[in-house]
Amino acid sequence: MVESAIILDSFAKSRTNKAIEELFKLKPDTSIKEIDGKTQEIKSNEIKNGDILVIKEGSRIPVDGMVIFGTALVNESSLTGESVPIKKEIGDTVLSSTLNESGLIKIRATKVGADSTIEKMASLVKEASKNKSSSERLADRFAEIFLPLLLLLGLATYLITKNISMTVALFLVACADDMAVAIPLAITAAIGRSAKRGVIIKGGERIEMLSKVKSLIV
Image 1 (cartoon, one colour):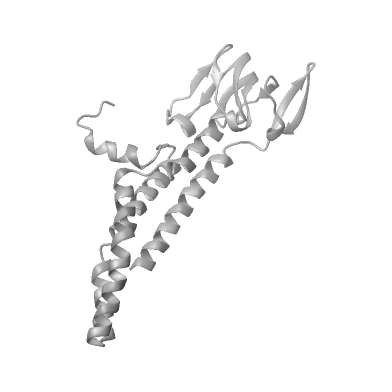
Image 2 (tube, rainbow, N blue to C red; image 1 turned 30 degrees about the vertical axis):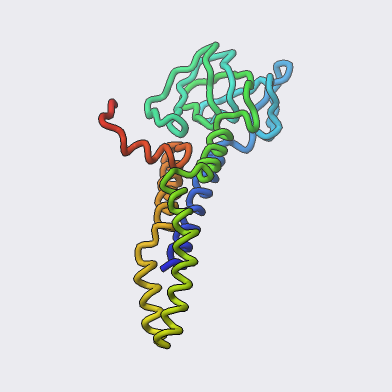
């Protein structure tokens, strides 16, 4: 049972990593940069703060920036969950990896690389798995005490009874409800699945806080 739970935990963590990869897939590989009225295609990771970028209809915005020309309807659902496209005009802020559904705009890059919204979201997902809730910390302390005692008890059972079946049965019963693995597994799976749906949770403590919610305003 312990081995199975560990395998499931590894699977849940891989799903979380996959969710991070899905976030990065939203970022375009190339972008159109304007220099002295002329445009050229560059790699998105070469964009610097202050660069002027042309965002055509149907293109994703590569970095955070401010609109300096034109108007467009931008779909921000991949980051904010808002399904209705938002009209962006001169002076408005646009976010990395959002989609220009209609119109043409030029933006000035304000946050690139690790400072962009999409990069920060990915960083939050990674950090979330490290921010353990009180239940996870309790499970860790439980494992530190329970597992060594279980091994000693199993050894003592075998030495006294010489019955391997009884010893195996003891381990199966003791590990059937392994809190030490079940709690972290549930937290990791929740963070990973939420990230895949565009919801970023900053650690297990935030999930535990939901149990205290008395009312929800939508």
